[in-house]
Length: 287
Image (cartoon, rainbow, N blue to C red; front, side, top):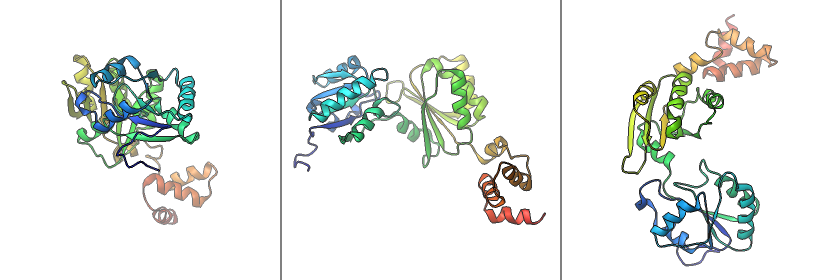
C-alpha cells in the first residue's frame, strides 16, 4: 500500500540509485531524496561515494559492497532489509547492477521477498548507443571483455555472427589489445568509439575498426571507453558459416549424419540459410 506522499521512501526496500557517470548535474531530484532518506547506503567504493554525498550535503551510514565481498555483505544487507531498514545501492558511476555485482543483491532480494525499486538515471551503455549513429532497435550489451587474451578472443568468436548492434566497455590500458582482437575476429566493420561520456573531454567518433586500430597505434588511449559496433551483415555471416561451401543437399545430409531425421535436417538447413523449409524441400526434390 503506497503512501500519499510522492516518492516516499519505503521501509524494508532496496533502492537501485543511478549516479552521474561524469557530469554531477545529471543526478535527479528523486535520487537525492532517496539517498538522503534511506537508513544506509551500500556502495562499490565508500570513499568515492562519500565524496559524492558530501557534494550534496548528505551524510549517511555506508557499507562497501563490491565483487570480492558480495557474498558476506549480501547476506548482511538482506538481514538489515528483512528487519525493516531501507537501503540505497550505488556504484561508482551509472546504474548499479549493470555490469556490476549489484545484480547478486537484487537476485537475493527477489528470492527473499524483499521489494526492489529503481531510481533511474545515467547509464553509459545506453548513452553511447544513442550517440553512436548505429542501429538502436536491437542491441546486445557485452560489458567488459575478459582481461586474459584467450578468454577475450573466445567471447568475441561467440558474437562474430551476431546481427544486433554490439556494446562493450573497455579500460584505456586494454583498449589497443581489444581493438586488435576485434578486427581480427569480427572483421572490419563500422563502429563508434565513445570516450569520457558527459565529462569535459567527452568524445564520440563514428569510424571503422581498422581506423580505430590505426589511430590508437599512435595515440594513447585516455579515459573510459564504450565501444559500439555494427552487427554482422549477411555476407559476413555466410562467409563465417560452416555450410558456406555446401550445396543444400550436402547441408541437409550433414545434419542427417549427426542423427537428425530428414524433416528436422531440412528445418535446420532452412533456419541456417534464412529461408522457408518449403524452399529447401523443393530443392531436395529436384535431385
